[in-house]
Length: 98
Image (cartoon, rainbow, N blue to C red; front, side, top):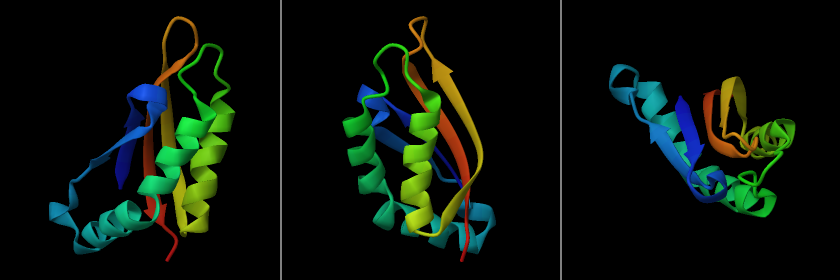
């Protein structure tokens, strides 16, 4: 499953819904939205990663902490920063540990 963080403080989440091919992925997306969406949004608003000189490991650790609590793990991540090293977007590919 893939999702991206973007917008103000990267606190908006867009889930890449390509679950048509896998029945289990649809359930994983629903569980992510139900259990992880709001905690990640709140954590990103508190972290404010769009400000200059963002420590990307703080963003990764924050997202990972929420995901691990709900039995997800990060498979891949990619961060997009601006000229002041403020985070503009973060892409994650995750899987369920259940």
